[in-house]
Image 1 (tube, rainbow, N blue to C red):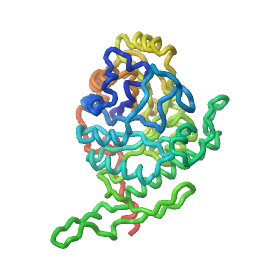
Image 2: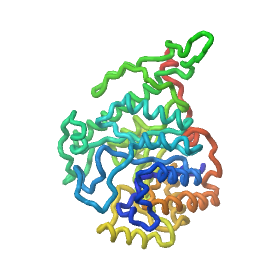
Image 3: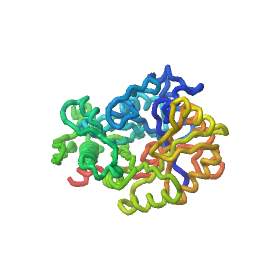
Image 4: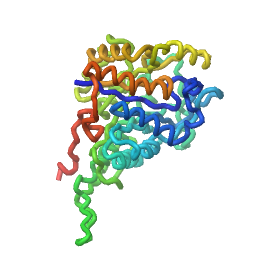
Length: 387
């Protein structure tokens, strides 16, 4: 079984000073051409997919609220809209935008991701994300959140506010999945001589009633090429593992060693035998990787810290690490380039070539959909089965 590889794209890279690298293009960050170039590079490397970060507030060094820093990138595009812009420019790679379930109606999320699946020909995914910050809630004014304070908090799942947001996220994904099934595959007739465009009997209300949403349906968007676009989730602990097990197809976990990876795999497998388990790594690649990272740390005024392990080294050394973690049960990797375009180029050109030499990575895209690339079957619509 060959490795699955993905790249996590976020502005100029995952180091906050990456925009100051000599190879960076800070003036182009807010242009379609810039993002098209990044995704084209990932596609040349035959990566399974890219993820695109998003949030409901500006990037900040504070847990809640905006900071006053002017030396780091601030601002993002809407990830779903950006993915839809990139879809016609790509042919094989999956596109997985982040979209928050907090403050966002699941009906809107469902039709946005379904539309992306249509315009990409079946290469769409979604990373649902919760937004715990009170400062984000104030952008919408519909709910009041308590200030989010990490002081003394070692387990986020112990916070009832966080637990409620994950429960809401699970309902949002369930609503989206039902809406994706609310049109049967052959609901569109499009028969000009008889004047019948759709078969109304093949459009189904979902009648979802939950603690957070009441959604009638059906969707306004016909069932998409994958039937169910791929749902992914980032998870660091038991509560998000449970969310991923109930709601996602792919989970991104954050081990810091092979032993840690094995323990996480065991825990996740105890919740679900079906999830694809990917590990996240922040990567700085090349013979001068450590020096480049040290220079960026100095520019930022602090050593980089991350929820994921930080790797500095050559692509050969990274390949060794990935294969070691695969023996611990990890099936794929979502690599976060420390600085783009350089570290993304190292992933797409150097790492994939190294893995291919070892017989551990593809030489062509073997499927036309993201589900196909990941070895996930196309599910039948639940309402068609019930008729």
